[in-house]
Structure formats: C-alpha cells, structure tokens
Image 1 (cartoon, rainbow, N blue to C red):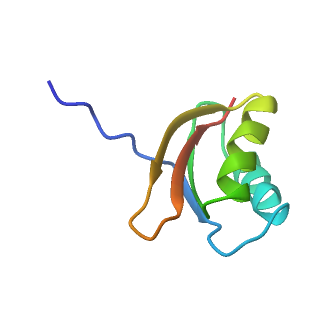
Image 2: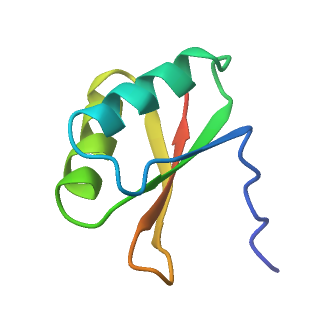
Length: 81
C-alpha cells in the first residue's frame, strides 16, 4: 500500500525572508484558509524552520509534514486548526 500524497490548498514561498516576517506571511496565508485546509510553506534552514512550525502549533494549527528540499530549504505542511 502506498501513502497518498497530501495536496496543499495554498503555497507560500518564504525562502529568503527573515524572521519574523516569514511567520507574519504564514499567519496571513493561514487566515485565508478554512479550518482543515492545508498550507504548504517553504522556509530557509536555520531560524525559520526552527521557529515557524512551533509558532504555528502554538496558535492551534497542526504540522502534518516537513521535508528538506534539494536547495536546502524546507517544505512544511500546516493544517489550519
């Protein structure tokens, strides 16, 4: 049995965006979605990937996937709570 690929409802590329603006952009994109919809966000390695997912979880959202991209950035799937 293969694992189904999760399809994001929205994508925001925050590569090259410093803290805290990447978190602000994440919040803005999540605000556009309905509960249960999924945002895929691309974040740089380091502080962005260390801070943004945890902040989203503290606000009631759920991290359902995280993987490193070939360029070293990260793709994070966030389900809106």
